Amino acid sequence: MSASGTGPGPFPGTTAGSAAQKQNASTCALLTSFDEHLAGAGRSRCLADARTAFAETGFVKAGFLAPDLVKAHLGAEARALAAAHGVRRDMALAETGFTPRRMRNVRRREIHRHGRLIPALYGHPALRRALGHVAGEDVLECPYEPEQYVITELTVRGDTHGWHWDDYSFALVWVIDCPPPADGGFVECVPHTTWDKDDSRLHRLLIDRPPHPLLLAPGDLYVMRTDRTLHRVHPLHAGRRLIVNMAYASRSDLGKPVSHETMDALWAEGPATPGGFT
Ligand SMILES: [Fe+2]
Figure (cartoon, rainbow, N blue to C red):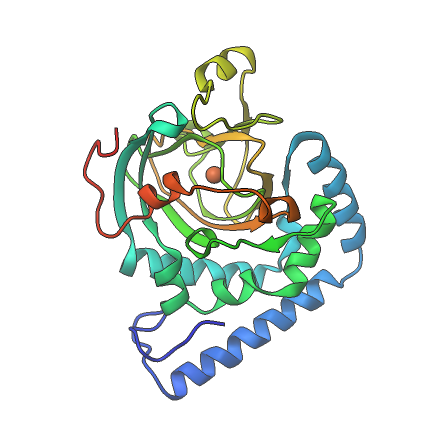
């Protein structure tokens, strides 16, 4: 759980003292409701079905993982953090064939400092156990802290999180806001692919393996095998897309060298220069 009382608080008007204590109590109550929800009737069947789908495609919708109350509080926290700490990024990354990143984002550091529920849920053992059931293997906290949890927000026509793979094996994405598919902002993916940072072969892959669009709505969660699934967010035409991305590692990730250059560029201090890093 994050430290509290030194910043502006997760929501407008909250400061230190009793307000922080109330929010800590509220976070604990939400984690309890999360645990009770996961232990509820039918959840084992949902996890088993999700595991089968995930093994086949490297992707599964998993809205069943969290109760509506938890989703609502997480969404409120993410909206407040995006408004207070979002930084606009506009760059193209060489390691993924110069695909663009045009978005606002909130780094793990600001979420950890000013948020409560997102950091608490990220490290919550019951969530990682559930994800382990879906993945069919241990799901571990990401050893590289800046990548553990981030918020991304697409608000302007043309905003996109361009084609890429992630450095670590798994992502759990909480979809807070997203437009209807006609307005863009939906996820596209090419499963069972791998990332060569020296030669991504990205456009060759897209010609040989046409991507699948994924239909998502506010309140959805999804789990993706992000190191073996080429994926992007289709450029936004209208509306807003706001998500919380939680990244997790596999056991095999812990033993491999990871260079982090795309993440370091994307989450650098201060606003990125338009077209930078190209
Ligand atoms: Fe990603």
